[in-house]
Structure formats: C-alpha cells, structure tokens
Image (tube, rainbow, N blue to C red):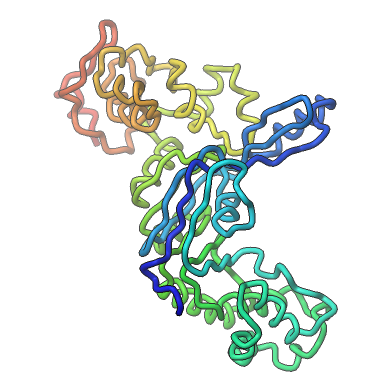
Length: 374
C-alpha cells in the first residue's frame, strides 16, 4: 500500500555533519587555504582538520510545507538538502523520515555513458527506488516527454549536455514523490522544452506533500514557498514565514543602522573572520559581534541600549536577530545617529515610547522625528 501524503515528514534532531580533511594539520598554508575556501566551521585535532558543514541543526518538515533555504554560498544549504535526501549520514544527531523522497539535484547521477538511453532509464529508475515492473510502465512516458526519439537507442556518450539533461529530467520527474528536494530551479533544454519542464515541475510540486528548495532567488522562493530557513555557517539563524526570514536576511544590506564596510573598518580584527565563505559581516554581527558589544556603526554605540529591557532580554536569550531588530527600530531616533540620504529613503518605524534612554544617548523628540520622516 502506498504511503498517503499525510504520513510524509522529515525530522532532524541536533544533526551535525563533519567532513575530515586529512593531513592538513601539518601544513599551515594548506590549513589557511581551507579556511578561506570552505564555508563551514573548521576544527583541528592531532590527526586531521574537520569541516563542520552542519552544526546542531534541528528542524521538522511536514505535510504542506514548501520551504525555501536561504543563505550565502557556503551557508550549508546544499549539505542540508543532501542530509534530507539520505546522501550524507549525520556525524551526530538523527534523521527520521516517512514518504518517498526524490532529490531533483545531481539528476544525472547513476548514468552510464556507454549504455543506451533506454538502458539508462532502467538504471536511473532503479537508483530512484523503482522496481523493473514500475520502470517498464513508465518508459514510454519518459521517452515521449524527453523528445529524444531514436537517440534513446544510442549510447549516452553521443548526447549533448542538453540532451542528457532532458533525459535526466524526464526520468526524475516521472516518479511521483511525497517529498521533493531541489537545489535551485531546474532549467533544461530549449525554450519549448523549458516551458514543458516548468509545467511538469509545477504539477509535481502541487501533488507532493513536502517541497524543500535551496535558491539565491528571492523572487522564486517568494513565489513557490510558504516557509523559509536562513542558514549561516551550518546553523539555522532564522526560520518562519518567507516574509519574516527575508526581513532579517535583507535589512542588513540596506538598513538604517548597519553598514557592512563600516563594521569591518570599525573592527579591523574581523578581517580574517570575513575570509570564510558564508560569514558575511551582518552574520558575524548577529552571531558574535552584538554579544561582544561591537558597534554596528560609529553613531550607534551599544552602550546606548544598556537600560533597554527589550534589547537586554534578547541578549540574555542569545537571540542576536531580535537584538538587531531592536537596534533597527531605535537607531533612527538616537541623537547621535547620522542619517544619510540613503537612510531617508526608508520609512521610519513607530516612535519608541517604551525605550529607556541611557545617560549621554538621548532620543530626538517625537516632533523632530516627524520632521525627518518621509
């Protein structure tokens, strides 16, 4: 009996993934190179260097979830997808799932270049968990959708890359999964085939119980997802609705209080930390800097928030995002704040009646705020 959609789920409990890099400890130059090009946390032992690609990740995916994975390159998005697909077993923690999972990445994995297209349909089908009877029933549909005709009787080594991807897509999407995993939106073939592929993929997603996609396209994630996870250095920094997650992800790049270049120039000891892919300045600020008392820019010393209940509660809870959001809402009203023309393009938040100003860091009056508000 086939699993019903209501049974589909994936649960990750305190999952970490370590990739060992052997013999790096004896070569300091190699270690420094690894530190610059790999987007995970590095640890060293007497025997090897470990790259922690996922760090204590706990998350649940259930029926109806359409989840977008957001974050810079090296944040851990692809690693998380491969854990969900069962490609990477966790170093620590556990993964439990129910339902048929189809990963729509590495879709040409398992192809044999010396075998024909028809033979590879069987090989790839077996790789996806189908038996030969199930594959036999699907061969005609796969062949028709691929549009490759008599080329299916030729070895794959004679295919162009576009033809190979058409066949791989046709096979992968012939399976009706409970859970779909994608690393970016699939684009294959010419314009006509691309339109057919999009229609087929849309239908597949609608019929599935769970879909998880990693993408750098905010437009794509907003259009097909109802939830999002923000990842950084292998950790979940934020999760919630798409709007909530992008609010945090985006305001650091265009906010009233945070300037990435100024943050680095104000704290020159951070330059080495910024060499790690996935560690953007705003990420360092919310993960470390805000707890170390580092100012996000010169006109906003964190001492100004010493008496603020909301800010201090966020700090005590180790919630850097909530603390940064409080700064975002207060910074424009500090008299020390130097508003630029860029800042003035933003709508001011409500006047902070509940903020307790610290001595030496007064707020402007409500009347003054009304004059500045666009």
